[in-house]
Length: 272
Image (cartoon, one colour):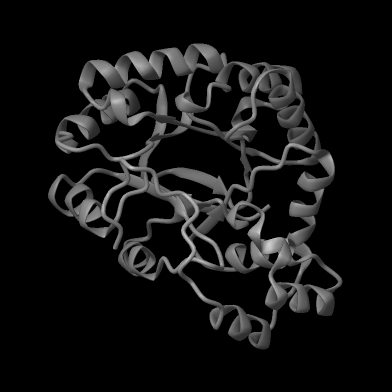
């Protein structure tokens, strides 16, 4: 598995997203993924599944140093006390002594970014977090965090797929060596029925979804965390790594409309 080096950590390019997985089904899915070779597990306090993920990690027998675990703090908790309490609860549920990456899940109105990052950097200093980052930050907020506050941002996790243009964020982060982690990389199942991707898939004896995933993973400084609860889907996502897209394929994907945003809650920031 290829990895991205950022702020002292190595982020596997393909990970397992776990949003809406809960309970025993979540534990089984994570156990399956780790057994297949996944080493990047993504969760969040808001998902309500850190405990079963912790159980799956403990049962896996895989050395902690071989696993990358990301979790996130919800936007209701973006104060010093709120972050510290949320992180302590996450760590206890995960049954870990540290996480590899701790992210601000969504920005919030009137948040104090300096206090937020100072608090998160203290967790790093204490050895309980290896790196910190953000999710759903448009360029304006990234600029404040990186240029004004000089926070050591290890990644920005954003919705990114073949149907959504994220060039503004990518063009800002790439020169700084800061990667993007793509959530909803298959646009919540919309890729499966896309005729352009299906035609490319037929050419490579692959599915449309596999083509869409490989298009992301071929990009420098982009990781992806497709949700996959079934073993067959997890394996299919791993098999996407074997596809070799050519310039004609990439040109066809570039020509697809790029205006489909699947995740846009009422509290979302103003997108670039």
